[in-house]
Structures are given as C-alpha cells and as structure tokens.
Length: 125
Image (cartoon, rainbow, N blue to C red; front, side, top):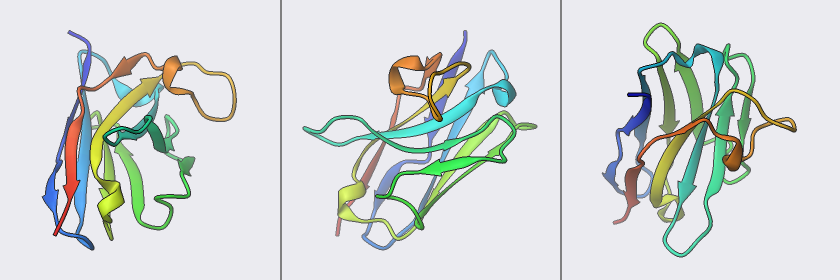
C-alpha cells in the first residue's frame, strides 16, 4: 500500500518545540517534492513548507519562517518538520504530501500524488 504517515504531533505549551515526521510506505520519497500543510478548525488548509527532492531548495510560509525547519533523509525515506517557538495559532492538524509534478514554483495542494492522514498539534498553556 502506497501511503504517507505523519507522526510526532501532540500537546505542547507556547514557546515549546515539536518535531514532526513524514514517512513513506510502499514507495520512495527521493523523487518527490514534499510539503507540509496545516488545517486549523474553521480555517482553510494552509501551506507551511516545501523541500525539493534533493533537499537543496526549501520554501517557508511567512507565518512559520524562522521558527520551522524542513529537512529530509532520503536514506530513511523520511521528511521532518522541526517546529520551534510554537504559538497558540500553530494549533491544527498537520499533513504531509508528496508531489511528482506541478505547475508553478511550488506545488498546489490539489497537485499532490499522496497525502498522509494527519497528526494533531495542540499548542496550549
């Protein structure tokens, strides 16, 4: 079965850190751009970060720039999102997605080949 599986979510206090992982099953990630997205209650899905297939190029949304870091280890078929200085507004379900083709500089969500099931991140005191 071809799938992405996110892990690492949880409950954290404001200012804390979490490290999310996105692991592929049934296929290798090294040919894909990987993106992280967030959906908060009552809000549209928001793109947060992308990493190119080789890891040399990244993108960060303004809302997470300087606080989140995306990385990949193609030998372990995994992509990580290190999240520091977390804020209450970072609460939501976090998803990873894999893209093999797209139009534009970075992919749009509807261009994804695979999505994970999501992992909940709750930032609360």
